[in-house]
Amino acid sequence: MSRRAPAITLIVLAGAVRVAAADQTQQPIAPSSAAGDRLIFSGDGAWLTGGSGGGGASALWSHTAAPQDVISAGAEYQQVANAHWTNAVLSGSLGLGSGTPAAALYADVHEGAGYDGAQNFDYSVVTVGLFYSPAEWLTAQLEERRIDVDTSRGNLPKLGLAFRLAKPLLLSVSYADTAGGNLGTRLTSLRLDYSGQIVNALAGGATGQAAPAVLNLLGQIVQPSPKLTELFAGLGRSFGRADWQLLADYQDIEGFKRTTVTLLCTLHLEGRDRSP
Image (cartoon, rainbow, N blue to C red; front, side, top):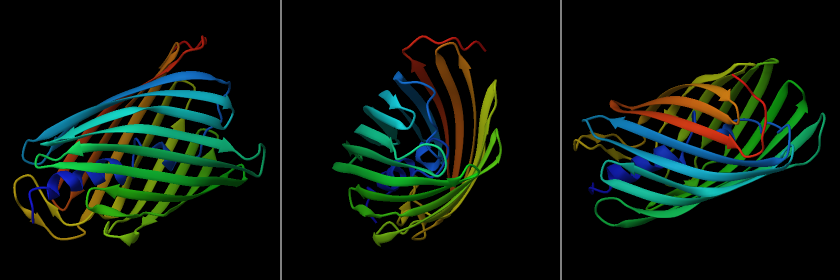
């Protein structure tokens, strides 16, 4: 197995097959209370088995034209061990009606390139999906994600359900399975979101088969399509014009472990009075 395998596999897990905390496409699109512009910044650090690590950052501009009509654009940079990559990001959503039932289409595109320590590679992940809410307490999600990262490519369709347990509680479950290509990915995830007046919180996990065969940074071979176990949690709070969120994510790929901590800040450019 070539030296390129560890970097490319980590890239697929970290970006293309996002199943957990920072992947907002896991959740129903929340209607915005008002039109306006926002700047969204994030920074993260990662710690890997063997003492290696990495980090990254992103910056996005987002505009809300109507409660579920949103467009965002920006860039992101990530570095893991001896690999690094940069992507342009474009995403958006379009509401297909208000009230109940209601639906919303969404799309997310990450296009870029990177270097894995041996040679350059291309990075392309395109996601399209639909949220449909037949009742106030239930939202169904149907998603298709096309992944083309160097030699790892394929489609990853996903089906999800979100249940409004109470006004502040949302329980989400989803299942994604590879359709074509060589991803070898099959993942089931569970997530609980709490939206309070002062603090927001989330927690959950995922399990299943990960990306193709892994050669970790210590040179140890993990069997093809290894088992992935993931746990994540996060807290958020608003201060004036800024919404802050701190996320922690832990992945164990049959003994090869990765821990990532991410801090996100959403800055509302229009004035608002939201005291802590």
